[in-house]
Length: 123
Ligand SMILES: [Zn+2]
Image 1 (cartoon, rainbow, N blue to C red):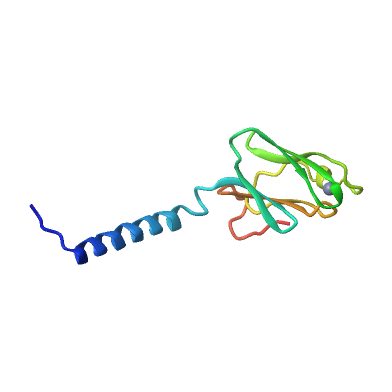
Image 2 (spheres, rainbow, N blue to C red):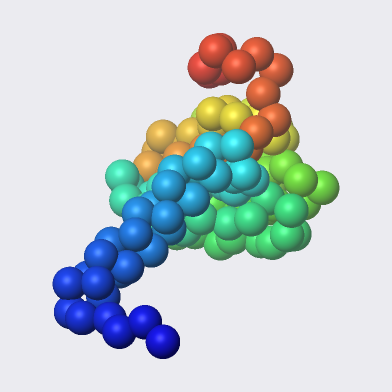
């Protein structure tokens, strides 16, 4: 039976926290397979790319963005913005690829280990 005093408890807590932190740091980036959706500069949500989902957003100027996640990729299914650039971007599924709907203030960014070239930041 090991007798633990308060200092030991603090030490154990610190070790556990450090272990948790290093786990998060080690697995950050290469284990991710998510899409982050930003609306008007703030995070609307982060979604698993492997889970099919529809995301309905009403952005700036009342512009509607319908985002769809399916088949491990994400695309702008519908937007009533004037340029339709976001819709025309098509499907994205590689790290740091993004879809931007400037009139609505929507930014969709993929975070995944799937990279065509590790050092390249595309688009
Ligand atoms: Zn758009």
